[in-house]
Length: 177
Image 1 (cartoon, rainbow, N blue to C red):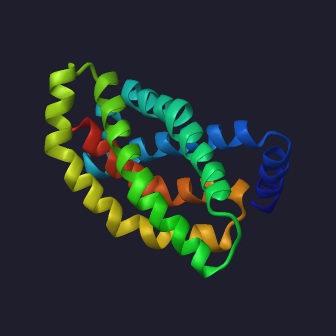
Image 2: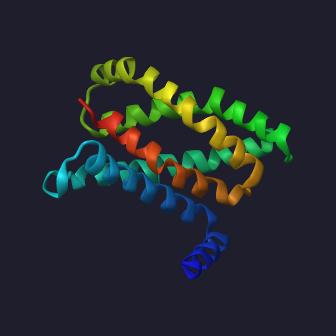
């Protein structure tokens, strides 16, 4: 296991952006598998590989680049370290970024599921508030710790590991009828 971590560290050092995106996409996919198998209890025969691939695509093309880019911007907007800085970053993340990100995520997943604009709007009206409230139960504490203890280039990976459970929830929320 230590060897895998060292290899990951080397790759991250050599290709930080690519590795962060691949990590995010892979872990969004893991979240979907958990959603389908544990939350929805679809079993292997009922598992939608197409859905998992779509969710991974969202991870590769949206979650990884957007969250990774956001962390870089956040470090420029609020430079420094320490508890007050971590708290400020968490507040900006949760007040400005999380609501927009969540709406976009749900919209993209819905569009990839073939919903029309009107159906997407209806889904957002039905699911967005609940998803945002659930976000606020989980992410503020995670983000304070992330911004306080974790170097910038590891933040996306740390968040994505914690987010396996969150991604399971989002996958379920995004794909339920």
